[in-house]
Length: 575
Image (cartoon, rainbow, N blue to C red; front, side, top):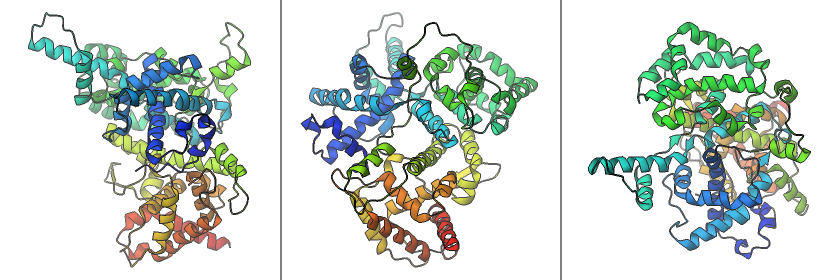
């Protein structure tokens, strides 16, 4: 179900479509196609970086069509990776569909991304949570490399044809046959960046005091030996590439000395280039955990290749919020030519790994400034930015756990343990089966696309919940209201600084939730003070009627109302 048709993005889009009647008065299906165009293009830009081997800092006008051609040519792989088995609304065998989709990319999607999504570190309010979000979202965007799929399909098909006929013959492979073969059996493989980015998340530079402990928890001899001995056997070329790494694992003293190099003092005294080299060497160990979903091409990566793809991100993802840039950049490297200020600015840009088009603080602020005064809501843009970043961080962390449950059970348990107080003790999303092995016991939202509010959803949340009959443990919450309660509870548990900024007020927290996630209308407010008040009253009413002591649905209670109940009672104490 598409929930973003009333997000702030559609109001922001107006200047881009004013001269194009084709994008006026969009239907829901047309909005869905535009939304999917943005998602595929955004993901496609990171895949394009993997394809070209260099990071994007901007898309020049002359190169827009080259980028859109790449997205069109790889549409099937991009769509399958992003949307799994969901049927595509665009028929790529229909020339008219293809032309319209390319026009959408060239005239709307890529120009919008150029204007909004290339940022510099200086323009970001970098809290530790924002830094961690950038790390996690980079990890998601670079988890797979779709560019290997055509080569794999071609090689496999040639091998089959050669085996069935004369092994000495030259096999000519038809492109259409390859394309069909690709998507019948194709499964994406991890990219060369994935082990490095997961390693960054393991060491967690935002808390340098814990780096050594984090490394020693994951990269034990037993963990590495078990991963090495199980699953796919490494090729001779891979073994040669990892030879020194494997020898280090076999020698316990060498392993210990390598890990001890990551002490807090050593890390903080190292410049960015040194931190990168340390992390890269450690990522070779991480790749052993992922070898079953990597091939020789991506296992044998080179330090320079990784650096070229991430160099503008490194001073953001290898730091904590308290560090000053001049303390971690090696200023001894001379400039060959003196760059202009514009060149310096553009050269430092990077593509923000999550599109903020649906909750851009500046756009929300401008929206309210353009609306008539009356019942609209006043808010602090600074608080709103922190709130939005907190929601993205919280959901990203749950998504990280979800992804690791598919990719590496050891790391899933590690990341849950890191947030045990929030995820196990407070929210009870997981339970410890013993020896720090965790089992998921309650559903949780991990997809940002599913939490936005439309006008009808907000209305139903209020109306249905007003009539919600609650008797003991026999109750059924409106699904969107339940999602809202879970997201707020995750926010409170995983980013408690937001609660302090909101003066521990459940009213403010719910109010900012609506400001953040809509609904928004082009010509009038999508909600007003009365809607906020009604929603707050609904939450308080439900909280009052549901008592965890009388309910057998303890896990549901903890993931939705436990922390909200505490905030409501905290309010009463300070009144």
